[in-house]
Amino acid sequence: MPKEKTVKKSRQHQAVQKQGINFNKDFGQHILKNPLIVTSMVEKAALRTTDVVLEVGPGTGNMTVKLLEKTKKVNYC
Figure 1 (cartoon, one colour):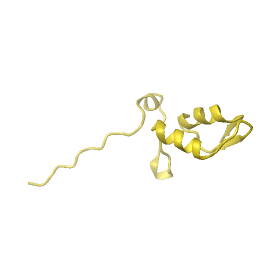
Figure 2 (cartoon, rainbow, N blue to C red):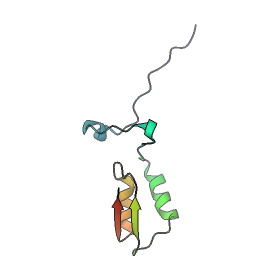
Figure 3 (cartoon, rainbow, N blue to C red):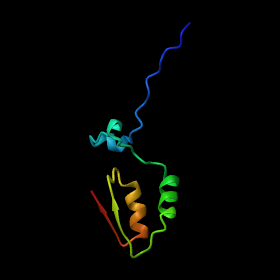
Figure 4 (cartoon, rainbow, N blue to C red):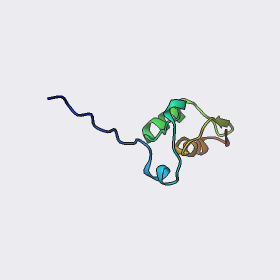
C-alpha cells in the first residue's frame, strides 16, 4: 500500500501570520527564529559599539534586536 503524502505545516510564526504578513520562499524570504543561530551570527560579526549596521530585509526583527544590543545604530532596507 503506498504511503499518503502528509501536508506540511507552515513554518511561519503564528504571530506574524495573524498580522497578515506572508513570506514568499520563492523570493528567498525566510524567518530566522532560532535564537542560538542569531546570537552566533552576531558574535561572529565582531561588532563594536561604534558600528552602524545595514540590515537588508529585517523580517520579524529577531536579529535586529540582537544587533541593537551590540552596535550604535541599525539601519534597514
